[in-house]
Image (cartoon, rainbow, N blue to C red; front, side, top):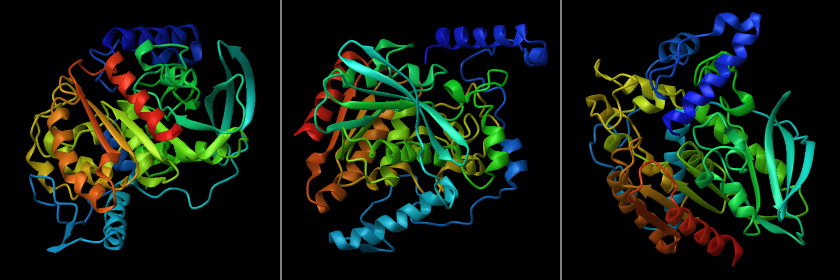
Length: 410
């Protein structure tokens, strides 16, 4: 998200609160940068959750390099059936940090709010139930002359308070109108507001301030876990539609939407193919875990692995911190949970958000490729590298859309 866009949105939010005497106390000076997360505080989360550092030692603990995914306790994984046990083990480690989701799911009970025709497609405004009494707003886009069942692509949005409006082509950067671009190619697409964004953001709070009430309600969960849950609940609803092919479900996202896609794929096998653009980095090559725990509320338990007193909101991207070596997992293991389903990592070598993203993606892919080979086909693991900052330029998006065509339409 560009600084100019962030400040415009923030100015609008402050103007609204200024007109309302009940929220006048919420006015504040503009943040000095889009990374000045005003109301999220890791220390406040720790008080709420009464959390302590996980007592977890793994093969990755203490290792500066990404571990071999096909080795455990000195033994090699050589058969697909052995990988299943390794996969369950890796998932259990990640679940320690994702936290505990609700034990039960209510019916999706989606409500259609509005429906309009636009160009060659229909856009339907809906709200679907994720937890009892919690309805998430979303846009369902489908071709006007749809017949039979079509492939579905979920399009989680990037870090923008435009939320679902950006993928749907109703606001924001035209490069990131993923749901619009794909419905024009014949896909059914769906996008929704993630927690802390769009209609699920209280403009009287700062960026990610909505995470504080979330953690008061769910002290043992994580915002990242909630993001996975909400996307999975969307699928619960979407597979009931008679024009959706439940065997051909994909996901694509940029930045925040990119790692939403990766995490959702790791834990929901109904997603058969996925694209992450500028949404991947490993802790060790990024240098620290600050972005995931202190700058954002995504995985707050990782905040216990920050040791340098010099890391701040303005100085953490690509800055080494010695505590990172003790994190008991890394995100190449998340990618391995997706295997052998088709995956495309689209990565910028000039990404200011993930300065080491290109090197990190290459090293992670080198570790994950043997897993795909073991499970039958390394060609399902794809990569694309470009040099256009933290963006989704035309050449990268065209490559991603063509790739989704091949995976979900053939």
